[in-house]
Length: 161
Image (cartoon, rainbow, N blue to C red; front, side):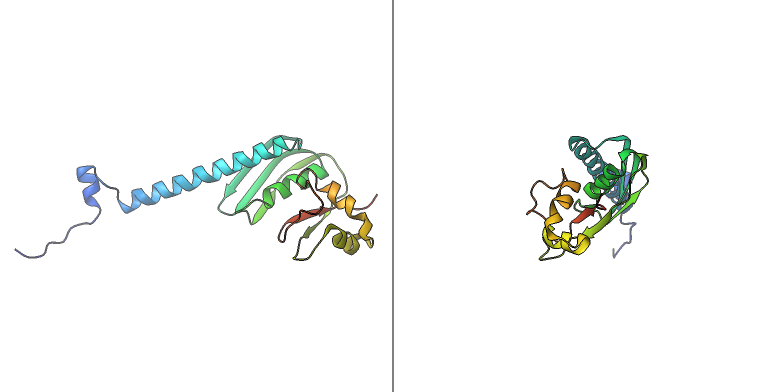
């Protein structure tokens, strides 16, 4: 008889068994979208649990990028929400689309490097290592202990009053 050629994935459609490459790809995309949607809802719940006041909070995740929208109570809340989302595993960028109800000065951001302490960071930004509680307070409730920071973490550095 000999060798016959067939369309490899046609059998799934004819016999209802298995899946075509296109069907498998579509399922993989749908699964990824569900995971991203679940991650976004988990982040929204975390923000609520941290009692950060954002009206109409919405987080959308696409691959390693997150978009955050809503009305934040103040600038500090806005920045903390950005940090909660951005300091989450798998998020590389945050597109801040939030508005602020009560305007305040914008804080600086600092990415923790190996060997950093809040005192060392305070010395860099404020010229006084003893001002570390200002940084600690500015990053509550995400920080629960001034000694528990890690390389790669991003912190708010507010202006001194």
